[in-house]
Image (tube, rainbow, N blue to C red; front, side, top):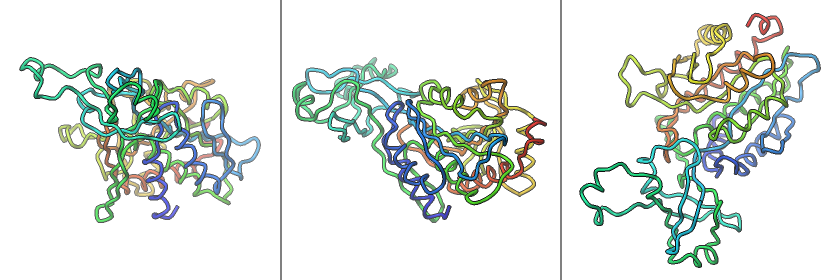
Length: 358
């Protein structure tokens, strides 16, 4: 995919509204770009599948996956003063939430702006200022003055999804991208780009991609998707948390502009060491920069695929994202490019015999 088209795709994916369970806008963007690449289909949980038209019968299946949802919020109740009580969707730290703009979907299907508010410091006691802020003490203010105005004029009801209100920006002089939802929209873009590189080409393996839903709330979509794909091997694209702005130098394992990250272990999965070595050897062979990590936290859709059927060798190809699970994230375009290039080279060198060796 040409650079400008890739940037357009990433921009549209980042700007799309799509907390877990409400990924419709994201799916629409992927359909727009994916229809030129292969055969598209959906299931009932809003997983979107992309199959190469060149796939053949009786070939091993390489499953590519990236999740479409983002962390956000949901309206739980409406107060008499018109403000919104909300719950978090996905993993948030309370201190990152207040004083930011959000978008709330109303009953007409449009999104209206709001601000996450907490008690102003002018009305806090000294003890109030020093205690940790709880999500239950925050509200979303849409400028309404009453319950009736919120429901009847703004048309906001309980159950409404809420997303961070952030617009994508690209800074070409440093090839850095700013925006929301790079976990995992940057992975979605990389996966679509990867599949597109094989248009018109013959491969000894079949490639099927799943843009899976609801990863941020317990890897739900992939549990359905893997049954549909029935893979022999898998690559999971992720927007992985970058650690280069807070870690000691010897602990930095997912820095910006140092290449994609291959994870040896996290809380939910120990990566197949043979497949991992194969991927690292490919990176070295083609001089593609890559980082390695061992994590004591986190987890990905890879854990679900890894445990499917008789066990599926799976690697996680992470593109570093600074400040994932906050309103604002930063990604290097070069990391995106290297992730796509590495995935392409890995797939090109896979065949039935190689898969058997894992």
